[in-house]
Amino acid sequence: MSYYVDGFVAAVPTANRESYRKHAAAAAPVFKEHGALSVVECWGDDVPEGTLTSFPMAVKRQADETVVFSWITWPSRQARDEAWKKVMDDPRLKPEANPMPFDGKRLIYGGFETIVEA
Image (cartoon, rainbow, N blue to C red; front, side, top):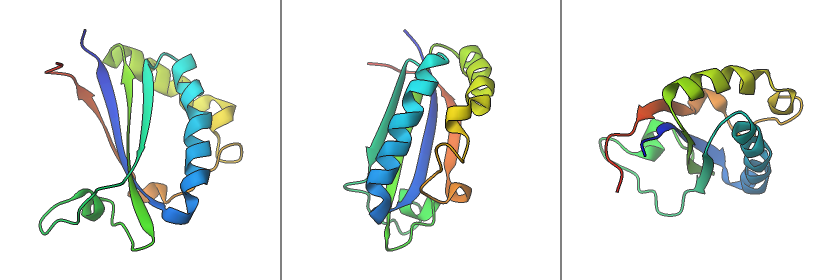
């Protein structure tokens, strides 16, 4: 079965690890209620600096930050497009209810069509 995937890379202040985990844990059920198949959040553990490109360079990671890599799987692009509108309107994800514990301006994201799955 093919999925549609939203991928994200962010730089999160290392001191905010638990705040980020709580933020992500609160957001995951909202995405799933609106049709996501899975939500995965990964805290950087072995994310090397590059000389030309790298995750740290892409998000302009500072010395006191950690790279986070996450993704959401959806049954299709159509399901994702319909869900995102609902997710963005959901009061549980408004900044006053679930503030982002990182600089959202440096968040990298995109939607991806699955072409190989093993």
